[in-house]
Amino acid sequence: MTPTDQTPSRNARQGPRPIPLHLTAAAALSISCSTAWPLLKNGWTPWSENLAAAGNALQKDLKKADPEDFAAALADELARRHDRFLTGLETYRSHPFHRDIPDPPALWESGPARLLDYGATSPAGAAGRPVLVVPSLINRSYILDLATDLSFLRFLSSRGLRPLLLDWGTPGPDQRARSLSDYIAGDMASALDTAVGIAQGEAIPVVGYCMGGTLTTALSVLFPEKISAMVLLAAPWDFHTGTNGPPLAVTVGRAGLEQLIAAEGCLPVEALQSMFFSLDPLQGWRKFQAFAEIASDSAAAESFVALEDWLNDGVPLAAGVARECLFGWYGDNSPARGTWEVSGQIIDPAGIACPTLGIIPAQDSIVPPASARALVERIPDATALSPAAGHIGMMVGRRAKAQLWKPLIDWLDAR
Image (cartoon, rainbow, N blue to C red; front, side):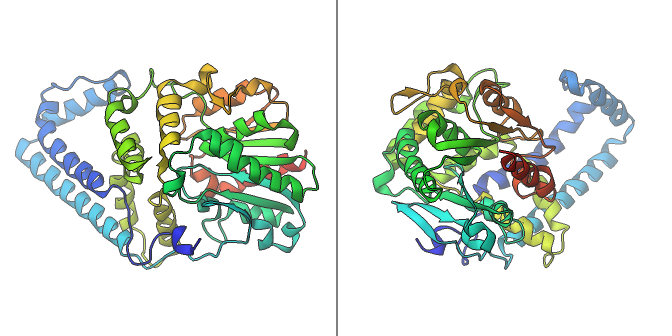
């Protein structure tokens, strides 16, 4: 697999994806602000309970404002913010920085999947204790190795461990009918066997990030004798907690999703990115305005571009996996209901006996903390850690090393 299979093209920056939604959201915000404020001034807008006090105070202030002066000031401010948003967007899309870090050697390959030996990045790590690291299926694994000075995997290696990363790659046409059972009992089991072989037959720790943590839970149920300890990093389990049931995308939108998956043989990246966009439609509006204020030749700008490139460098989901995740996990909540099966076996975390550390980032907007907590609480004697960080920030944020990396290492060392 060539480097261009793993990193964005140097000639065309794809993000932010899907860009039409980001531009539409920005335009809609400007229009809605311009048309809504007269209604707000006259008390038409009903407030939710948590906004009632601030909303009522705002209405009182608006009644004192001169309508023409306020309308002009609002138009000027919206124009200024829109210009800053577009400036940040274009600065990102034309930025010269591109991640250029060679992958370590692969110890095992199967189709697009590879087991990368990050022990090779450190003399100490090459002889260290193997640790299997499992990322999500829908994002590139290099978020765990974003930069040489901001790499969770290289940090583990520098501390005497031998991280073995299961890099999923991109499913080709011949992998698009695969199920979660194929991935877990197939690729993951083979990678685990390779890692156990390196450990001379001894059970090893496994670290799973996001969806990779949910898959790792199943792996631990299927092969308990091969796993000595488990770390779950924001692993979702209860997909209905705090949502009042399944999302509309997999109920009302199920027929459309089925048609798309059937036609493409997968769930395309643009569809996945649209789902992430729906979690916070104005996130791009805010962050690209902020990016416009950063010097484009600064280290902070490079960090922003590196992370944004990763966010937009998604991976399509094989058709079978997409159906299981969307309609089984999100639709039926099969993991939390105790009906999720892998290779014919119910995945019940209550039977996991190995020491388990569950990381539940307190500011996670992608995996609700209650969803990850439901899994940790189901595992007997599991230890929970809740850093004041977000889903991605806990892995690559400025405080990631202190908040997560070091405590994780200390926990593993104690076992």
